[in-house]
Image (tube, rainbow, N blue to C red; front, top):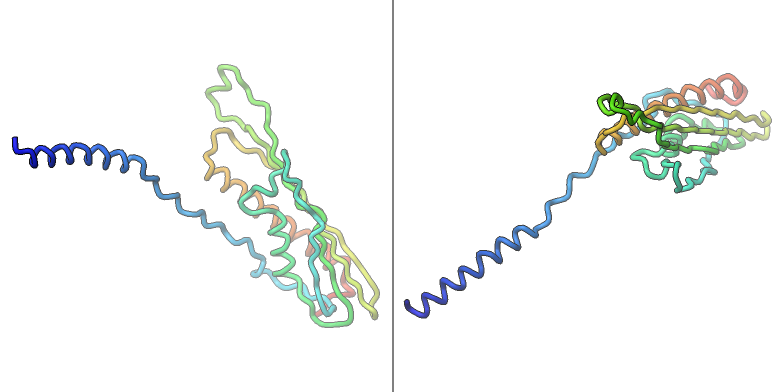
Length: 202
């Protein structure tokens, strides 16, 4: 065989396995980023207070430790509370201010006892429990009309079935926080319109 031709064949024999090996090591592209829904209250009517300014205070700090998960969920309860304050409260003008303090916006997840018997294996069981508590205090301080405050507390819990995929779990957590936001919306509006009537602008 011609030496030059033998070298070409040997080179091809080396390059082909190398190319296959490199192709096998090529990382797959990352999955597309999840598009999270925007939990908004902008479609709800504004609550106008006779103050010159409204400030938000986040007094709540996530623990970052189990069983707490408020720091790790797709949409945190505290984000929903801040959206409510931004979308629904308005300063209609006046001497004084309102302060919305987020006292609590915690969320936990705990394991539930499941049936490990033969009958339990063949049925879908509720394996996790998620629970949340939100507490918001709104203070109004004015020179002419005096001062006032309200506190709203909402709590919600729900169980999750076993064998959820990561996407299914995220979807369940998002729906849970959305429902928590609706609870808070109703409770805060009731407290403000019922107990801060002297500070409501037309």
